[in-house]
Image (cartoon, rainbow, N blue to C red; front, side, top):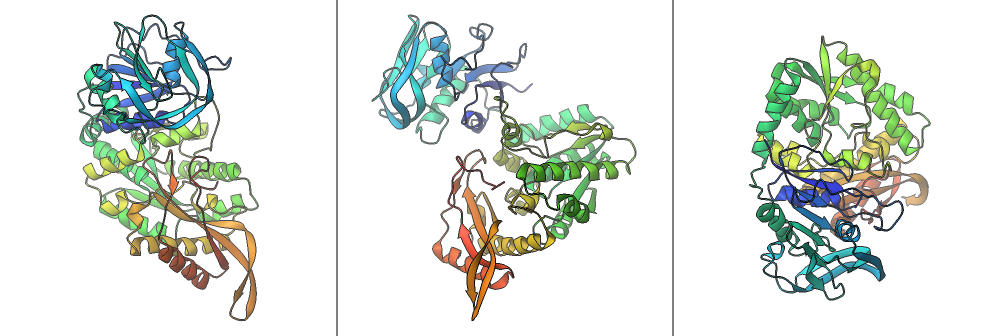
Length: 507
């Protein structure tokens, strides 16, 4: 059985980064809500407590009884996790004079402590908290300080319990991965044997056991997630898988035809459905982003329902849901960031069970699995594309003419990225059609036409992203081409917002 690290999520924005860093150590981990620790699981090797948006002394702070975990598993508390363990055992946590955010350096640390093995003197760490530990319980031992934080790390004497007030999971903590490796490998004893090949082997076995001889329909989108899910399922159940690719009318230019051709080479059984008229009718006049997403999500289910009834004895609906989809759709605080048609649930009328073989993988891990499965590189490196397609890149109501404008502009932008060798350097890119018109001049005529915004970001997992610093010459060429070749557009802008605070998509 696959050994794992459990990460208890107290609501931090960087909880998913902890998971990514552990996975990068070739060690499987799962993120679970702070109060949902999986008891009696013999595969658990250690526990990490995440940060939190709360202070430990807030009345609404997330609290959990660690007595059943402590002493049974090694524990590493990060930021709130460290403060929580100290506070609930009699230590003091108080508001810092000013919010401690950003770079700090380890001024001193216990070099003989296993947690700091291989860490360099003065190593940079990343702080992000409004509180600080001012006193620790008697049986807690300080093992590190920074220039501003006296108790930057501690260990409980005689126990495999550590706490750090900085964030080893973020990129700016120079030896953060080493610290996590010291905990995961040296303390917890993980073998570092989790890999794409091992994931495929175990997942194919699980799918065979889960699905048996049942028939499965899978919703393809043309993206890497659903494509990898399809190939993985095809490897497990072969002819019992039927893939359905729905054209909701808001795909990229010529995408329906191109994607159907791509799937031929993968040996998949694919049914293509042109349902664009249905979606345009249902979206007519709808402006609110969540409403658009829900209409498209329901529309997919409706189309699947019709197609699934054409196939005898279908029992399962498979989807390419990945970890960020699940995490962003509903956080542990119950706050919906955006609905996602992959995890919105199925209507009872379908009477199909849900199969999501990739739901615990991050995007870069999905790509590694795709390569291990032997899929063509152009499918694996394809940029993420939202399930609702261009509907969430058209701000305001949806019309076929707006889609035509956006498809043409988007095609110029994406092809330009490829031609200039920039496509693989960008995580995600696209064009947004803005709900404004602006004055322009073309020839001797005054125009009053639409404005578009180009969006291109760099990222590793879509949980955080920065705007891509594309060459000015490229931007100028793309702007000219869009304005000259796309009827209806006379102004091009570039979005330079990072995530957070913005999201990658505008809606």
